[in-house]
Amino acid sequence: MTSQTTTETTSNTRGHVPPVMAARELGVYYGDFHAVSGVNLDFNRHEVTALIGPSGCGKSTVLRSLNRMNDLIPKARVEGEVTYHGQDIYQPKIDPIEVRRRIGMVFQKPNPFPKSIFDNVAYGPRVTKMKVDSMNDLVEQSLRRAALWDEVKDNLKGSAFGLSGGQQQRLCIARAIATSPDVILLDEPCSSLDPIATAAIEDLMTDLKQEYTQIIVTHNMQQAARISDTTAFFTAGVDEESGKRIGRLVEYNDTSSIFNNPAEKSTEDYVSGRFG
Amino acid sequence: MMSTRAEKASTVARDTTRRIAMGKRKGIWKEQLFKYVLILCIVIAFVTLLALIIHSAWLGRGRLDLNLITQMPSTLNPETSGMQSALWGTVILMVGVLVTVVPLGISAAVYLEEYADTERWWNRFIELNIQNLAAVPSIVFGILGLAYVVREGFAFGPVAYAGSLTLAMLVLPTVILASREALKAVPDSIRQASYGMGATKWQTVWHQVLPVAVPGMITGTILAMSRAIGETAPLLLVGATTFVTFNPDSAFAGAYTAIPVQIYQWASRPQPEFRELAAAGVILLIVVLLIMNSAAIWLRNRYSRFDL
Ligand SMILES: Nc1ncnc2c1ncn2[C@@H]1O[C@H](COP(=O)(O)OP(=O)(O)O)[C@@H](O)[C@H]1O
Ligand SMILES: [Mg+2]
Image 1 (tube, helix red, strand yellow):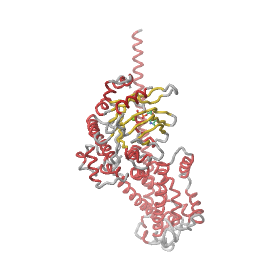
Image 2 (cartoon, rainbow over the protein chains, first blue to last red; image 1 turned 120 degrees about the horizontal axis):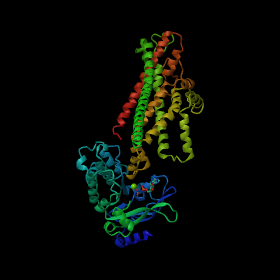
Image 3 (cartoon, each protein chain N blue to C red; image 1 turned 90 degrees about the horizontal axis):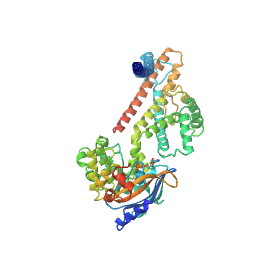
Image 4 (tube, chains in turn orange, cyan; image 1 turned 135 degrees about the horizontal axis):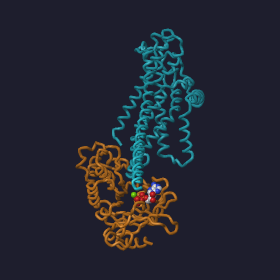
């Protein structure tokens, strides 16, 4: 019922530029459990899209299905379409490895590899066999891009575990951009960080907008309002047919509209803190 | 009436406090007891081990000399007899076990842990049987080795590598189980991160999972090798000769013996000189074991430079 509203608003405001990525009637099952259904979203070039909503409504599930990380969960099954530059990434001929090289991911808890800072950044280019003139330059560039270079340049051979949580998360971002992806998915990247580290990541994301399309899951309303261009609000409701709880997209629009002038009552309740 | 009720209430309160206090004291007492029982267990194990070592060292003290490793065994001159052939036999046997059991055990563990779909009955069947195999007595492996490694099947004949292969089968379950535990302990977030970078499954296992699991795998291998080095029964079955006065030609040719087999042979002789030799042999066996394990521990520490 609401998904129609969603598609309309989307096409009304930004129908002219083809989106980098899009989800069409996307649904995800974990075994018999239908976690989310009927998601339609367009992700525009060099914009930040925030996915918000109460816990368990399927934000991470949707995010993981955008670069086929759901393939790693044995019971997970995806229906509908996810397109990347118009190509459905769930076609049998598509290699999920290729998908993940173009659509990078940053996780909720900083998860650097148990290796040196240098090797963390160089890992992606190495395993994807990127043609690199100088690995040193690429590592430096990536770390600079992630606003981490000045803090680690004298300790590139040191363990990544020696860094603070916020530094580790920026290292994870540096690592993700080292393979020059097109899209970066971030699943609550600041949820384990203090406010200062959070601010650093937010600045970084705003800065990265010039080159990357970013999709971020966040629990933090202010964060969504500060850094995103568009916002998608999800919720979990009881399905009338099956009587089971199922996640769905309620509303998708410019961030300012979602926060100042939401079309749905539940969106308004959520963004104003009266819900969830 | 009011006062009695108040009194009653206060008695109840006091009672409760006392019960809580006593309960607490009782709890502490139990905890202390448990701790001391555990310490006692360690002490018993340690004292037994130490007593054995000291006893052997004392008995064999007269023969803990260079002759022990430079001389061949002799039935005529026990005073100068050594066990060079047995030492070499054990070294060759252990190298054979190592190069066989490590690739097999680690591959099996990687398959079961990283690739196998545990929903499938055959994978569960394999798992169950590996656990069962770990409990099979070593003599059974000796019979298996005699039938399928020495005589038929591989038909190596009674050479050192036949012994290695038999011992390798014996300790393979230990290596697999320990390696699986080591792989299980690798945080999933590392795998996720690697896949998220566009790494393949093989790259993820090779570059991220295995290096983290190696220290645990080495620990498992130490346990396995420590068990294999002391085995006598299966070796007697697959042809380790109790009396050899020359070093084995190679792993695949020539008669061989091993330290525990040599000890067994000496210990069963009546002359006190041979008893002394056997005791010295026990110490030599422990020394070889310690050298082997120290090397493994050194290797393990090199691998765990990064703490998780
Ligand atoms: N690996 C999984 N296996 C089974 N169910 C899952 C799995 N991951 C998530 N779910 C379920 O899917 C629903 C959506 O989860 P998730 O996408 O993590 O929500 P969110 O990120 O919005 O908190 C929840 O009900 C959750 O229990
Ligand atoms: Mg989530």
